[in-house]
Image (cartoon, rainbow over all chains, first blue to last red; front, side, top):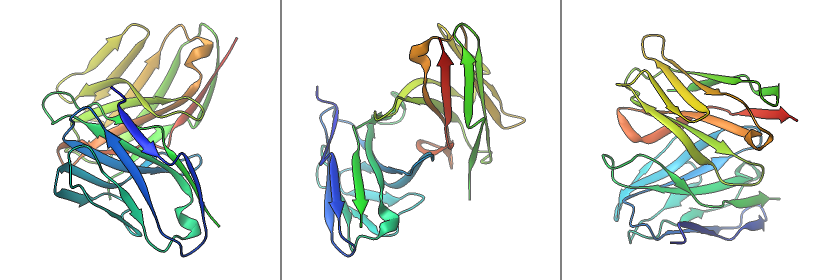
Length: 114
Length: 113
């Protein structure tokens, strides 16, 4: 099992550009999440999904969009990048509640918007 | 909105000493409280968790206690070792859903050899 994988590892964007952060998990987990981590801060939930075709907003969804067409993939789309979106982005997944609630994190994507 | 407060933000201990990190939460419906360890440049990893129907849980040198009345929970690390040096995050589930978490701001633990 590769677990949760994310691409790219690093990216520099110019203000106003768009990009998609990719996230894939091979553990057949129902739940997937996107977090951002700002320096010296905890993780903030951007969006989450409880299964293919179902997504919902977290604490900080503005400026982002997601889709979940398959169990494995949960891409995060940034439209019109802004300096405030400079952060490290982590994707995570967990099995259906009732089995275990452990969230397994990907290695992260470090994004800089200049 | 719901929040989780974590203290201290930094903690320095001598190898072999104990370390305690404390968190308070605001959502009375919170029922799941995990702790994650994040080494520099790495991903967060779960080290221990506790549910609201349990007051204490231990796993070797790590223990977590929960006081639901006071809405606070703590991480205890005994016999600290240099490899325990990392940032530790507490989290609490919100709105009664164990898969939706609010994280604390983290504690940087430094274990001096």
